[in-house]
Image (cartoon, rainbow, N blue to C red; front, side, top):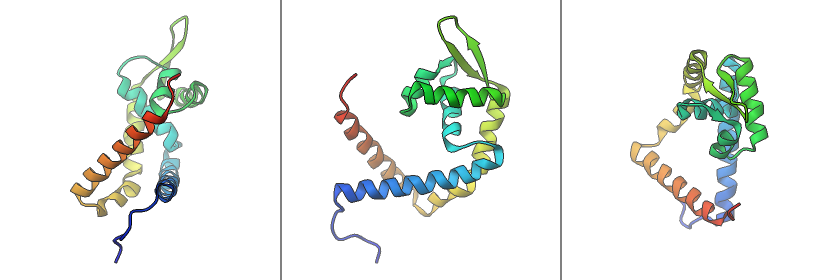
Length: 148
């Protein structure tokens, strides 16, 4: 029987989440290697696509919880691959997605299907509930962060 009788302690939950995150990212990176990408670079590309306009490294960093410098490194790599176009706005260098970047993102989604199918063992209602619990946990953690 896989059901837990007692609620796990917060530290146990943190350890389980970290272990699951590590395993998931490792598998996604293995999949994405086929298209010369990593999960982190796929996520940056997703942020740029979702922005629908010019986006600066600091904004990408804010949306992903990265430093501006880390986001800029990934954006430079995406630029070298032709996935984003760099636009010099005078005060900053921003990027926007290219058609090749949209195609690359579609390839990323395609090659990660096998790993993401691992969530298919969850019923839709369980995935919904898990999503709600994760959002609630994130919101609780956000309240702990002191404003800059």
